[in-house]
Length: 275
Ligand SMILES: Nc1nc2c(ncn2[C@@H]2O[C@H](COP(=O)(O)OP(=O)(O)O)[C@@H](O)[C@H]2O)c(=O)[nH]1
Ligand SMILES: [Mg+2]
Image (cartoon, rainbow, N blue to C red; front, top):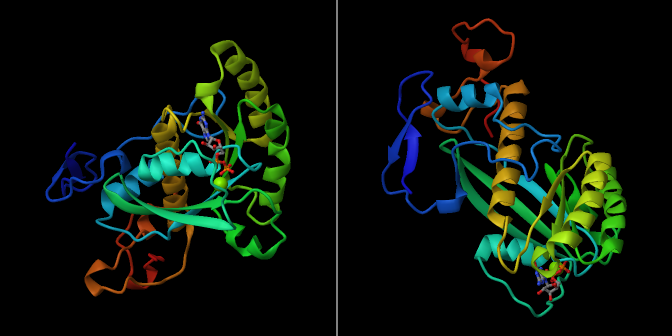
């Protein structure tokens, strides 16, 4: 699938092919992917208008890498889920995660570069141990449970509470049931209904996936990335730190993108944080 770039026409949302950049594949996101169940999701079905406006008007901006933490009981399938997406591989032998594993995945969202850091945790220890700092400042938390193990679903709430002690309450929240290939449709809908209720209580978006078959894995990661990007751009627009980009020519001004603000020619001093 070809890459796309803004056409150069101000306020245009038409994208034209970008040469020499064909490798993004599933890492390219041009519209907000749907939720597993749109009606249950606490999150938007579209990119916000402010994000779309910013992406249209700004040639390139530099967003901080967004951190996502994968937490949940041991052996529920956290590492397998991450491996399926990052390496498109699956190993049926259990390989214990020691401490925390990191991955950084590069995406192109609305023709802008965006990095997602994925922290895959061991699931044995609690956050107050040595690894506490790895869990701080996350923009999204993915609480994973095993669809064949109801206890792991009951523990989901506790995992979320622990993550919330170290992060902002408005962190993006997901509840993901794994090993969908091991349960039949009847059982899946039974535990799925319980999980949906749990997700509503947790103010999280529910997904059911299989790392073995790959079912819903790419869709889930694309949704996670698109929502993280949307949040990051809105936070960037809201920030007022006058920090210039290292390259003089790339000084960007998002001042006029602020909501309810009259569009006016930006003053030099009003460059916003692009970092
Ligand atoms: N059938 C099936 N097995 C899975 C799936 N995901 C993980 N597993 C198996 O469950 C075990 C634990 O998985 P792992 O990802 O290491 O769990 P973690 O401790 O949460 O990281 C391994 O033997 C995996 O092969 C899945 O989607 N389907
Ligand atoms: Mg693991």
